[in-house]
Image (cartoon, rainbow, N blue to C red; front, side):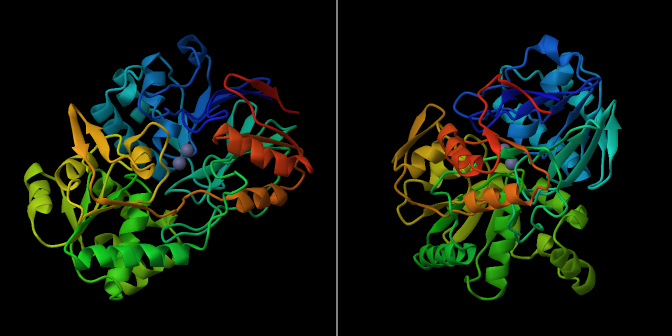
Amino acid sequence: MKLTFYGAASEIGRSCIMLESNDARVLLDCGVKIGRADEYPMIEDADLAGIDAIIISHAHLDHSAYLPHVFSTGYNNPVYSTKPTMELINILVTDYLRISEPENVEKTGLQDMQKHFRLVEFHQEFNVKDLTIKLVPAGHILGSAMIEVSDGKQKLIYTGDMNMRGTRLLEPAYTQLLHADTLLMESTYGGDTDMFPSEKVIINQMIGSIKETASSGGKIIIPSFGVGRAQEMLLLLDDYMKSGQIPPMPIYADGMINKAMRIHRHNVIYCREELQKRILLNDDDPFKSKNFIQVGTVAERKKVMTEKEPSIIVTTSGMLTGGPVLKYMERLGADPNNKVIIVGYQAEGTRGRELVNGSRKIRVGPKLVDVNLKVEQYHLSAHSDRQQLVSLVGKVEGLGKVILIHGDKAKSNELAEAIRKDHETSVPALKDEITVG
Ligand SMILES: [Zn+2]
Ligand SMILES: [Zn+2]
């Protein structure tokens, strides 16, 4: 099998890998690199024509947002994914096209994309020509999958983005019975220093900080990815409020978080078992908690910004590249009593990264907005850390080669050093081709 890396090679973003066997050509993921200026997979439109299938690991835009463009070029074959991934892509990608108006993603393919999904269950094998393919849970966001591909002679596992630690929403990645010749692994947190401290310690610090701001009458803004991080945060805040560890105050959810919340609720079968039991056996549905207030209109948002009481506002986008969070920053950013809590990955060149780096002004449209509120970062990750990535390599039986992608180049190289003593390991550059088997 031959792999060509059209994105996410020595970088994070625009995951798009062509896999070619004797008979078949498939794309593993099809994303856009979101940043100050979006970047697209380096595949020519003409090369999209001969593809037999696209398989999507999960709904995040860096794995899915190029799909409408691919369909706009006349691509007419299936997109395979889990059901929640399809539903989340429909809202995320539609929203992305509406808000960002990307210059190289043709919207004309959006409807075609929606018609060409083929849904597959975890652990259910399907075929694309001479390839046998199977998705297994990746523990990263709702519906996220690792993709196993075999041509009958060689087997490859592509991790997509994966988390080996269970979360409030999801079971950890499925790492039993993994068997492959080649592991194509993400390396977002593969650097030598990427060891996550205990989540409990971080959460306690964050809860303490929220209480402190609330007691001085301030508002807490939590910018968040609409899918995954936002739901994890809402469930966490709800748990702490119900147990009295956070004083009662409104928890506002603004942006596509609310739609994504409904998708989580009706796909609860893809969530962790404990959550399913809470809902089915105890009629305790955290997705419909009375503590959450949806914000949907301009008037509602204005009320949230101007009311005197403290509140928590969970809103998109997670890296402050757009969305309602910018409205909140414009209105609430100058008041030192307020606080921004950053909980997700912040890409280079985004307003989120600028804030974390200490910038005290951010540009919103033509305006330069003063940032006097406090900015704090708490590392809560939906990815595996260095140690877990290394441990995954050890869990794959029969493994020969490891290929590291979806990481800053320095981090991928550091991880490669650690793995190389046991396995042939490479960190491809963009447009590199690697033949396996
Ligand atoms: Zn992701
Ligand atoms: Zn990703």
